[in-house]
Length: 280
Length: 280
Image (tube, rainbow over all chains, first blue to last red; front, side, top):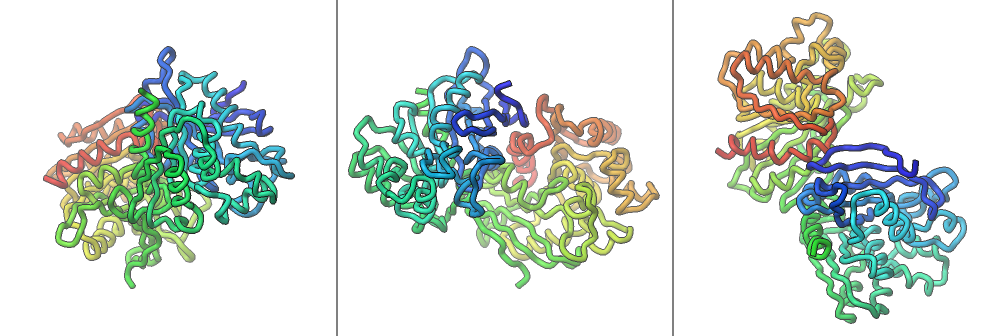
């Protein structure tokens, strides 16, 4: 059996299901969650929003805390939430919360001991969508979004493979990882000391070199986010977007922080943003 | 300081805050969460929905998973979520998940070693509302709701003290605890072997003896709830309500289970139900 059901719950008339499967790309068993809205039945494929979570998360945080199913059920959009790293025995790890398991940074690692399993970019942009599109009543109309490390992952996925997505959004993304402590630590471990190799995994660097058609992009950030000035680099993303005339919708929210209380408050806006392109 | 802030997050334009305080009734420090909608400012007191959570929960499960803040912010209703039992060093406990900490059953225990701290009924119906009404811009218009063990707690609170509430609702309540394994285990421990003493804490028993004005009541239950036939006793509640011409709105949902995915799917209906009375 390729896909094994871990749990299954009816939600807003649709179904939230956790599956486990063996990932070839990551060379380990992986778990993901999919929310299929009531519209998703055989013969009526729905578009898919991929959601990438932040540090320490699994597939569960977004599905349990964001309240996205209500809008997804209204709009007829499926949501897929992968885990944030490879896991299990034999997978390299680090005791810190911001490296190793739960902290895959959605890149393809080149350095030992990480490269054997940490190929999250290929997993979330290629292997997982192929699996989803083979097994569920979904179309190939895709959008991608995420939070914090997952916001970075969504922007990088869209900038590296724009032909695969119709729109991209992010909450509180780590926008310029080459220049912030979280990113420098992870990139040094996964990609090595040569900062040239980091450019291919940094949304500000990718955007400043981008030559293709731009992709509709929405970013929301809380102005009371405790990581705003030290880790997120939103102003660098805005500058890079302006320099390339990139269509970045930036929404800044006074009083909001980095938590899922913030994500939940504005997830409806993100789903309606993606619906403009997914359902067009 | 009577109330100490534990955490604070902006949510849907209002504020979710966790506080700790010393409970006189429970003789231990307690934590609760309050969501104040944007309408709650000095001089504009808002009504309050008290939410009682189920076995193993703290104040966090409902606030993180139910998605209630969106509707509370729209309607102008505060939500207060207490913990599910006394906690801490010196508080009696049991290794099982369904007795002791996390399983207070919202009653006043009479048996040793529980009675020293397990007085959750007095805490949630009396001490906590007094504290909330003294410290926050809320009115004395109250409703009460809850899930599973907390659904039992909400029904019992409303049936024992109907003058304190304008409406009551429950998701998947343990409706007839005297006759189900969860209830029998907890009541034996907290109240002793004499089942006469159980009647004062059992919503079916209370309802069958109720003489006052009835209270608007809504109950939702999932028909794929794995505890439906063994623990919930909904049919006994329906029979007791019919015998007393009690205004029970029962909503049964095919496919839904006992989880917060179920609660989240119908919390909007419950808040709008309570708003009819709280905002009248």
